[in-house]
Length: 239
Image (cartoon, rainbow, N blue to C red; front, top):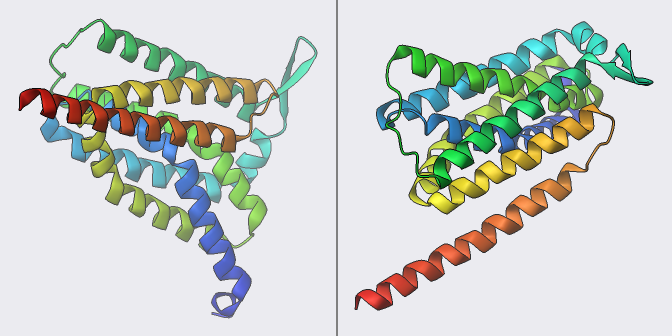
Protein backbone atom coordinates (compact mmCIF):
# COMPACT_ATOMS: atom_id res chain seq x y z
CA UNK A 1 0.00 0.00 0.00
CA UNK A 2 2.87 2.34 0.80
CA UNK A 3 4.26 1.81 -2.70
CA UNK A 4 0.97 2.99 -4.26
CA UNK A 5 1.15 6.28 -2.36
CA UNK A 6 4.55 7.19 -3.75
CA UNK A 7 4.49 9.74 -6.65
CA UNK A 8 7.38 7.95 -8.40
CA UNK A 9 5.24 4.80 -8.63
CA UNK A 10 2.52 6.60 -10.59
CA UNK A 11 5.07 8.44 -12.74
CA UNK A 12 6.69 5.11 -13.61
CA UNK A 13 3.27 3.58 -14.40
CA UNK A 14 2.26 6.42 -16.74
CA UNK A 15 5.67 6.49 -18.44
CA UNK A 16 5.80 2.73 -18.95
CA UNK A 17 2.21 2.62 -20.26
CA UNK A 18 2.99 5.33 -22.82
CA UNK A 19 6.19 3.48 -23.75
CA UNK A 20 4.34 0.20 -24.27
CA UNK A 21 1.73 1.91 -26.48
CA UNK A 22 4.34 3.69 -28.62
CA UNK A 23 6.48 0.58 -29.00
CA UNK A 24 3.32 -1.40 -29.77
CA UNK A 25 2.57 0.57 -32.95
CA UNK A 26 4.66 -1.74 -35.11
CA UNK A 27 3.02 -4.71 -33.38
CA UNK A 28 -0.47 -3.45 -34.28
CA UNK A 29 0.56 -2.94 -37.92
CA UNK A 30 1.82 -6.51 -38.18
CA UNK A 31 -1.24 -7.84 -36.35
CA UNK A 32 -3.66 -6.03 -38.67
CA UNK A 33 -1.83 -7.17 -41.82
CA UNK A 34 -1.71 -10.80 -40.67
CA UNK A 35 -5.35 -10.86 -39.54
CA UNK A 36 -6.37 -9.55 -42.97
CA UNK A 37 -5.28 -12.93 -44.39
CA UNK A 38 -8.23 -14.55 -42.63
CA UNK A 39 -11.96 -14.47 -43.47
CA UNK A 40 -13.62 -11.35 -42.11
CA UNK A 41 -15.55 -13.26 -39.44
CA UNK A 42 -12.29 -14.48 -37.87
CA UNK A 43 -10.25 -11.26 -37.94
CA UNK A 44 -11.50 -9.68 -34.71
CA UNK A 45 -10.93 -12.89 -32.76
CA UNK A 46 -7.43 -13.26 -34.24
CA UNK A 47 -6.55 -9.69 -33.24
CA UNK A 48 -7.86 -10.20 -29.71
CA UNK A 49 -6.04 -13.51 -29.24
CA UNK A 50 -2.87 -12.06 -30.75
CA UNK A 51 -2.87 -9.12 -28.34
CA UNK A 52 -3.79 -11.38 -25.42
CA UNK A 53 -0.80 -13.56 -26.35
CA UNK A 54 1.33 -10.41 -26.49
CA UNK A 55 0.26 -9.49 -22.96
CA UNK A 56 1.01 -12.96 -21.60
CA UNK A 57 4.39 -13.08 -23.38
CA UNK A 58 5.49 -9.73 -21.96
CA UNK A 59 4.37 -10.58 -18.44
CA UNK A 60 6.22 -13.92 -18.56
CA UNK A 61 9.34 -12.14 -19.77
CA UNK A 62 9.05 -9.68 -16.90
CA UNK A 63 8.72 -12.50 -14.40
CA UNK A 64 11.85 -14.10 -15.89
CA UNK A 65 14.24 -11.25 -15.13
CA UNK A 66 17.11 -13.73 -14.80
CA UNK A 67 16.39 -14.91 -18.36
CA UNK A 68 16.43 -11.31 -19.59
CA UNK A 69 19.84 -10.84 -18.02
CA UNK A 70 21.14 -13.92 -19.86
CA UNK A 71 19.63 -12.69 -23.14
CA UNK A 72 21.75 -9.53 -23.01
CA UNK A 73 24.97 -11.40 -22.15
CA UNK A 74 27.37 -12.39 -24.99
CA UNK A 75 26.39 -15.79 -26.38
CA UNK A 76 28.73 -16.33 -29.32
CA UNK A 77 31.41 -14.58 -31.37
CA UNK A 78 31.24 -14.33 -35.18
CA UNK A 79 33.75 -12.47 -37.35
CA UNK A 80 35.16 -10.76 -34.27
CA UNK A 81 31.77 -9.47 -33.06
CA UNK A 82 29.88 -10.65 -29.99
CA UNK A 83 26.21 -11.60 -30.28
CA UNK A 84 23.80 -12.07 -27.38
CA UNK A 85 20.58 -14.07 -27.38
CA UNK A 86 18.70 -10.79 -27.79
CA UNK A 87 20.77 -9.92 -30.87
CA UNK A 88 20.03 -13.28 -32.50
CA UNK A 89 16.30 -12.94 -31.78
CA UNK A 90 16.26 -9.43 -33.29
CA UNK A 91 18.11 -10.58 -36.42
CA UNK A 92 15.83 -13.59 -36.94
CA UNK A 93 12.70 -11.52 -36.32
CA UNK A 94 13.87 -8.74 -38.63
CA UNK A 95 14.59 -11.18 -41.47
CA UNK A 96 11.15 -12.77 -40.96
CA UNK A 97 9.44 -9.35 -41.14
CA UNK A 98 11.31 -8.36 -44.30
CA UNK A 99 10.55 -11.68 -46.03
CA UNK A 100 6.89 -11.80 -44.96
CA UNK A 101 6.19 -8.18 -45.89
CA UNK A 102 7.94 -8.50 -49.26
CA UNK A 103 5.84 -11.55 -50.14
CA UNK A 104 2.66 -9.73 -49.08
CA UNK A 105 3.53 -6.68 -51.22
CA UNK A 106 4.31 -8.96 -54.18
CA UNK A 107 0.96 -10.72 -53.82
CA UNK A 108 -0.86 -7.40 -53.59
CA UNK A 109 0.87 -5.67 -56.52
CA UNK A 110 0.64 -8.73 -58.78
CA UNK A 111 -3.08 -9.04 -58.12
CA UNK A 112 -2.88 -12.46 -56.53
CA UNK A 113 -6.23 -12.10 -54.79
CA UNK A 114 -6.62 -15.65 -53.59
CA UNK A 115 -9.52 -16.27 -51.16
CA UNK A 116 -8.48 -15.98 -47.49
CA UNK A 117 -7.66 -19.41 -46.04
CA UNK A 118 -10.35 -20.67 -43.70
CA UNK A 119 -10.32 -23.34 -41.03
CA UNK A 120 -8.75 -23.89 -37.64
CA UNK A 121 -5.26 -24.55 -39.02
CA UNK A 122 -5.08 -21.24 -40.92
CA UNK A 123 -6.43 -19.36 -37.90
CA UNK A 124 -3.92 -21.02 -35.56
CA UNK A 125 -1.05 -20.29 -37.99
CA UNK A 126 -1.87 -16.57 -38.06
CA UNK A 127 -2.23 -16.31 -34.27
CA UNK A 128 1.05 -18.23 -33.82
CA UNK A 129 2.93 -15.89 -36.17
CA UNK A 130 1.53 -12.88 -34.29
CA UNK A 131 2.59 -14.37 -30.95
CA UNK A 132 6.10 -15.26 -32.16
CA UNK A 133 6.86 -11.88 -33.73
CA UNK A 134 5.57 -10.16 -30.57
CA UNK A 135 8.48 -11.71 -28.68
CA UNK A 136 10.79 -9.74 -30.96
CA UNK A 137 8.78 -6.52 -30.60
CA UNK A 138 8.50 -6.85 -26.81
CA UNK A 139 12.14 -7.52 -25.92
CA UNK A 140 13.28 -3.90 -25.94
CA UNK A 141 10.22 -2.55 -24.14
CA UNK A 142 10.45 -5.20 -21.40
CA UNK A 143 14.19 -4.67 -20.91
CA UNK A 144 13.57 -0.90 -20.74
CA UNK A 145 10.78 -1.43 -18.20
CA UNK A 146 13.09 -3.47 -15.98
CA UNK A 147 15.60 -0.63 -16.10
CA UNK A 148 13.04 2.03 -15.16
CA UNK A 149 11.49 0.45 -12.08
CA UNK A 150 12.01 -2.54 -9.82
CA UNK A 151 8.34 -2.89 -8.89
CA UNK A 152 6.99 -5.87 -10.85
CA UNK A 153 3.38 -4.86 -10.17
CA UNK A 154 3.88 -1.48 -11.87
CA UNK A 155 5.43 -3.12 -14.94
CA UNK A 156 2.63 -5.70 -15.22
CA UNK A 157 -0.07 -3.01 -14.78
CA UNK A 158 1.53 -0.88 -17.52
CA UNK A 159 1.54 -3.84 -19.93
CA UNK A 160 -2.10 -4.74 -19.20
CA UNK A 161 -3.31 -1.13 -19.62
CA UNK A 162 -1.38 -0.70 -22.88
CA UNK A 163 -2.68 -3.97 -24.35
CA UNK A 164 -6.29 -3.11 -23.44
CA UNK A 165 -5.91 0.28 -25.19
CA UNK A 166 -4.46 -1.49 -28.25
CA UNK A 167 -7.40 -3.91 -28.28
CA UNK A 168 -9.81 -0.97 -28.31
CA UNK A 169 -8.13 0.68 -31.31
CA UNK A 170 -6.98 -2.39 -33.31
CA UNK A 171 -10.41 -2.79 -34.94
CA UNK A 172 -10.52 0.82 -36.12
CA UNK A 173 -6.98 0.57 -37.51
CA UNK A 174 -7.90 -2.67 -39.28
CA UNK A 175 -11.03 -1.18 -40.90
CA UNK A 176 -9.08 1.87 -42.05
CA UNK A 177 -6.30 -0.25 -43.59
CA UNK A 178 -8.75 -2.59 -45.33
CA UNK A 179 -10.76 0.34 -46.73
CA UNK A 180 -7.61 1.90 -48.22
CA UNK A 181 -5.43 -0.62 -50.14
CA UNK A 182 -2.61 1.90 -50.59
CA UNK A 183 -2.44 2.29 -46.80
CA UNK A 184 -1.98 -1.48 -46.54
CA UNK A 185 0.96 -1.30 -48.95
CA UNK A 186 2.39 1.55 -46.89
CA UNK A 187 1.96 -0.51 -43.71
CA UNK A 188 3.86 -3.41 -45.29
CA UNK A 189 6.62 -0.98 -46.30
CA UNK A 190 6.77 0.15 -42.67
CA UNK A 191 7.25 -3.48 -41.60
CA UNK A 192 10.16 -3.84 -44.03
CA UNK A 193 11.69 -0.69 -42.53
CA UNK A 194 11.16 -2.01 -39.00
CA UNK A 195 12.62 -5.39 -40.01
CA UNK A 196 15.73 -3.72 -41.42
CA UNK A 197 16.09 -1.70 -38.21
CA UNK A 198 15.82 -4.90 -36.12
CA UNK A 199 18.50 -6.64 -38.19
CA UNK A 200 20.77 -3.59 -37.90
CA UNK A 201 20.21 -3.45 -34.14
CA UNK A 202 21.04 -7.14 -33.88
CA UNK A 203 24.36 -6.42 -35.60
CA UNK A 204 25.09 -3.53 -33.25
CA UNK A 205 23.95 -0.63 -35.45
CA UNK A 206 21.05 0.91 -33.55
CA UNK A 207 18.71 3.34 -35.30
CA UNK A 208 16.75 5.75 -33.13
CA UNK A 209 13.15 4.54 -33.31
CA UNK A 210 12.00 8.15 -33.15
CA UNK A 211 13.16 8.60 -36.75
CA UNK A 212 11.22 5.50 -37.81
CA UNK A 213 8.03 6.60 -36.07
CA UNK A 214 8.34 10.11 -37.54
CA UNK A 215 8.77 8.66 -41.05
CA UNK A 216 5.73 6.43 -40.48
CA UNK A 217 3.57 9.31 -39.21
CA UNK A 218 4.66 11.66 -42.02
CA UNK A 219 4.11 9.04 -44.75
CA UNK A 220 0.69 8.14 -43.34
CA UNK A 221 -0.37 11.80 -43.24
CA UNK A 222 0.69 12.29 -46.87
CA UNK A 223 -1.16 9.12 -47.94
CA UNK A 224 -4.32 10.19 -46.10
CA UNK A 225 -4.23 13.52 -47.97
CA UNK A 226 -3.73 11.68 -51.27
CA UNK A 227 -6.68 9.38 -50.47
CA UNK A 228 -8.95 12.34 -49.77
CA UNK A 229 -7.80 14.04 -52.98
CA UNK A 230 -8.56 10.90 -55.03
CA UNK A 231 -12.04 10.67 -53.49
CA UNK A 232 -12.76 14.33 -54.28
CA UNK A 233 -11.64 13.85 -57.88
CA UNK A 234 -13.74 10.71 -58.20
CA UNK A 235 -16.77 12.60 -56.83
CA UNK A 236 -16.30 15.52 -59.22
CA UNK A 237 -16.03 13.17 -62.23
CA UNK A 238 -19.19 11.36 -61.16
CA UNK A 239 -21.24 14.58 -61.13
